[in-house]
Image (cartoon, rainbow, N blue to C red; front, side, top):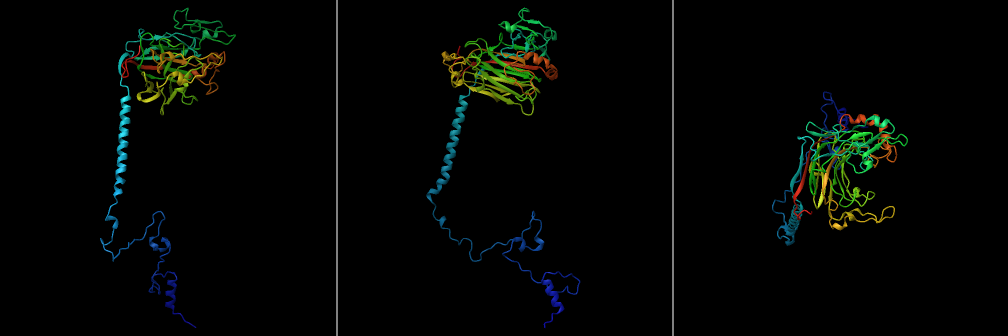
Length: 462
């Protein structure tokens, strides 16, 4: 039988991992040396005091191996004795690539700068309205026929719809005289009044007929143009304006040809610098937070190539009705582009690099089998029909039946194909008219029209 001394038992107990409290009779026991397993994980090989949070792990001090037998400079490096002659190309080839890359970039930049047209512009019109409404330059167009779009407004020559206030031009739509609408048989005859600027009977006469649901134009608005006083062929136009806010308003800044040289619309072209809708930003097609630019051109109204160059621009965290912006167009023999505030913020850019007949890819015949003829082929120029004098138009249309406002969307109160569309619009006036009250007008601060004085590619064609 073996007998274990009590002190020996305490020593073994400590070695087994049972701690001995200081101050006890066994506190003088020998503490065994802690062995570290070199093949264990770092956690197992660390002293307890070194183990902490896993996100802030304190690693033990590392001692690196230093050879006592090999001294610095005694190690042989044979690769340093003789250099590979091909090694220099590792540096030369990338340098050659960088040089040629910079050279090509320089040539491209130079060619781009060389091709930029630097025109000298001659002033044609600089209108700030300080002299009032100048009838030698501006014309208030008076019509009630819808201007080919089925618009609902009658444009007037009164100060109710077009006037100068605080040194700026206001174009403001208003409600029509209700008696003209409610009284069956009422006639609005602008020809009889001697003020119609239209050319056909339908441009100048409107009738209320309760039997077929037609009414006199339900609203009045304004449309002014520079046809008599400011026309250009190639140049730059800038209009600084604040757009209206109101449901079913259609503001526009655009240009038409002075003469229909190549035939009726759209054969002779149209330049839309800016078009928008007065509805707010929730409107499905885009309200006054979006503007668009386009060119209209084609052999007939059914074949209009506008959709090939129509471009929209959305305002950033605001609307175009919340402040003034400059809407511009620059136009030459080689190109035409529109912009907002600066020429760097371009909206639409069209290069005259091929004839418009080819650009349009029109069908050979109309829907009734009539052969389509190229109205521009005899000129031999790529910029036809945009090679003639154009004049400027500023207006607010109201509604339409041409699809500018999509049927069945965003609470539209009329249907385009309905024969009583204006009446349907009028009956919903309690919905849309209140939206015009705060900012239902287009305010024009300044208009600048400049014509090209010199053209680098040759003299301006006459």
